[in-house]
Structure formats: C-alpha cells, structure tokens
Length: 110
Image (tube, rainbow, N blue to C red):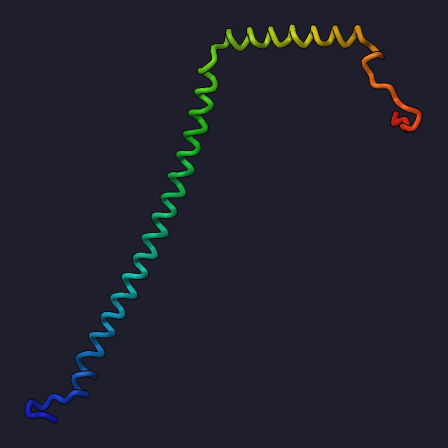
C-alpha cells in the first residue's frame, strides 16, 4: 500500500470495474436502441413502398384510360373487325383446300 491508503487492486475493484460495467451497459442499450430504430425504419419503408406501388398502379390505369381517345379505340376496333372478317371470307373460299394433306403414314387423330 502506498501512503494514501489506495492500492492498485482497490482502484481496479471500486473504480474501474464499475465504470467498465457502466460503459458496457451503455453500449448494450445503444445497440438495442439502434436495432429497434432500424426495424421501425424498415417497416416504414415497406409501408411506403407498398403505398407508392399502389399509387403507381392507379396512375398507370388512369393514364391508360385517358391516353387514347375512345373514338380512336372504336375506329381501331372497327378496322380490326373488318380485317378479320375479310380473312374469314378468304378462308371460307379456300375451304378444304386450305387444310394440309395427310400422308398414308400419318395416323388419323379424329
């Protein structure tokens, strides 16, 4: 022991160990707090992402509805229907000649 009555062992036991334990507890609490904050941020991020995706989907639908005028769509539908009817008429004229011929080796699947 030295003249002041404080030994090296006493200093370690009563001063340094409680300080180190307090620092360890402080670091542990900070770590738990950071993990909780990260989880809250991730949850908020997931919710925001879902909301944004829903808004984008509704915006796409709105753009699709309003982008092409209805009259233009009707005209396109009419032209396509006329073209398909012409194709049907041509196929009706060709009739059985349009079907591929079977060879003797091919079995009938009917």
